Length: 180
Image (cartoon, rainbow, N blue to C red):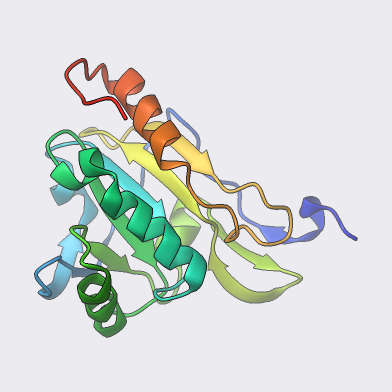
């Protein structure tokens, strides 16, 4: 078997880097679809979460874990926003079926994923987003990141929601955030 270095993998942005600004199709929890500029969402920190596609079993597990983790669902301190290759129509169905309270960006050509350095191809096939999360503050500074580690298929690792929560509480100094 080959090593991770033998696969076409972009270099992900790091903590302290400036997140790119972009405008892309955006589906809200109420089902509306429009174009949204990322910097316009940064009135509060955003946890931008990249995943492969809507309705894959591992992505269903991931988004249900974010949904069921009430602190993220409240949206008071940090806004969770998803990004995947799925189009707006499928995003609407995904949000409705899973009863998600999070908006989703559509990154059909993987330009957003490439800008964050999380686009990859295993064995040179099927471009996709590496499962990852970036906490971005109002200045577009990346304050925290989590990256999937699986050497062959970076979609297999599921974000450890409680660990991400704890890291965000520490990073942002949120003393009054509930403990889970």
